Length: 86
Image (tube, rainbow, N blue to C red; front, side):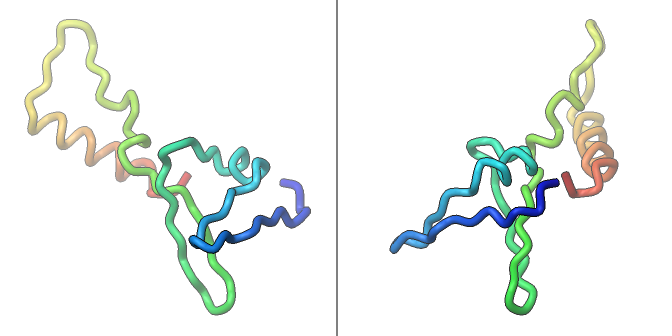
């Protein structure tokens, strides 16, 4: 990772643009949700995985059907296996 400090300006509405290098490094896509953790005088930003992290996890094999309970268990298992970070 490049150690240059990208920066952005906050507007009067509290909005800012995330620098391209940061978006690319964190794989931030339009519509992604971000989480902020404030620690003293700095904040950590991370991408909230949400449902995007489950993309493709529940794809069934041709002809195989899953009950709702099986789908829910598979989704929970996949979410646990992803560890909650990107």
